[in-house]
Image (tube, one colour):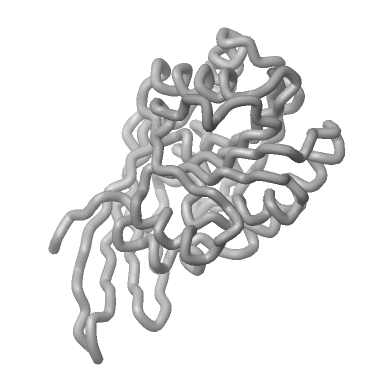
Length: 248
């Protein structure tokens, strides 16, 4: 079994793996957000854009220019194949800066991507980079998994995802505020022959108060905080995800 970088193997299958329902929910959410806060539709940046689905949603909403940003070469390759009318750039959160990211109307970052930042200092640096990229009045919307997610997932048994060419076993481990998602990935080579790969994803669960203080410390004004609850395998319901909508 080979251990590979995150999303190196999954990128090709990510759209079906991630689920269409969630992306549809975000499409509705973003549409309502743009209308509610009367966000100008000149420039939008989709951080951790993955295969570009939310980037395309921003284009469909009517933004004149959309820039998708991700650090995975494989995910960006998939995005570029699908969406020719969107610009994509390979950057991580800490290097997200420069003239090409200036005077932005809206920055988005979904699917707990910011939980991959394992230090508060890194999260604050990212918030600062986003703040600097936005124009005055620009909006930043993102989500984070919560300590409630860590509680809920800690007793989960391994789960399985499969399609014709892919078989993934997802095993969760939790230690304090850290969630380790171990993926054993079987990819069909030919006939009934498969190659086996392993990916390990590590996330840190941040308390709401910590996130709010970091946002305010770089200058953001809190517009809304929306909480999402989920029922886990133990039958209990926890606050598993928080959406933050903030303004420069």
